[in-house]
Length: 423
Ligand SMILES: Cc1ncc(COP(=O)(O)O)c(C=O)c1O
Image 1 (cartoon, rainbow, N blue to C red):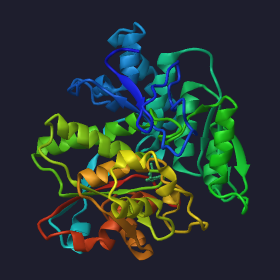
Image 2: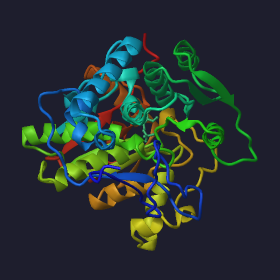
Image 3: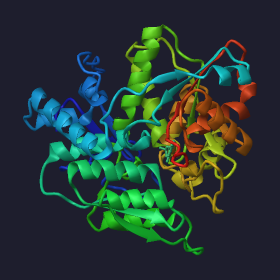
């Protein structure tokens, strides 16, 4: 491995090896939260000749460092990214671009704050931010080379669609584990993208998400984790970090950092990625301070809020909590329900990194009630963003947490998923 990048499990310190160092070699051992993180020696500046996020920030990608260690030239890596991006565009209509930042003036008025801005990923590849995670993983597969292997993911929505688009662009086979109630439009699109779709029924005697159990069995059987969950593939996080890098650059250019950032949390990879990118940018002096990072879930299921409350109650550091996983994180006991069904994960898989971001920035855990979820979606639409309810859940959280804000405050949210119920 290039001495420039280090891959290490935050839970136990083990360093995965081989062509696919996605998960900790000790995964499943002890009551430890094993998640591989990449550590870079320095925070490279963006390559401003490119707008493409995976080219602009490539010197911060472990895949670029691994390519260098394997003897690739920078040009070969750039060409590889461009080829894969063209293939994505051929499959989905467009490749990756910087996600726009949009002002939500009506939301600011309704909340009684100075400004609300949104980073919009609802029109990104496959209609959400999820393809960022998976394109990042695809670059690792590109650099590793070797024969094609089956890829696997468990999801009923945006992550599955993103995986199917990127796998199709790679021309690797993909198996998608979906629940019985996955939307017909999603299933049809997965078939059109030639994914192998497997429906998983919930067994009342087995806690947790049945699609996730089936996914784990597939990975144990040799499939590669092509997913958006850090414990199964720690390197999925860095593709999502390109969104945080973009935001930090935008704030630096405006000379203004928001006071609060509200992020909707399902499995937690989105928040883990954005928080890590912003904290890196702050540590490198690119932005003078950090917003308070608040995590938003619904009343339907809030394993992250539960974990943060336990963390606060026990006064332990996050590193210690990562070695006592079962005291903080376990599957939500009842089948969760909410309009924001995309963030109803039974567990917040990336809870440790999220907890670090919340604690480091004095953030809070917020529960969005159902009426604000609808209201947030409507306000996004008035600003011209066709967001789904899940994608607007961070903004909905702002309505449930209005007591946290002063009239002079500047809020930031992510409108992260396209509304497929609209024609
Ligand atoms: C539109 C949208 N926004 C946000 C999220 C939350 O992302 P994560 O599961 O990484 O917390 C999801 C997850 O499916 C999503 O579909």
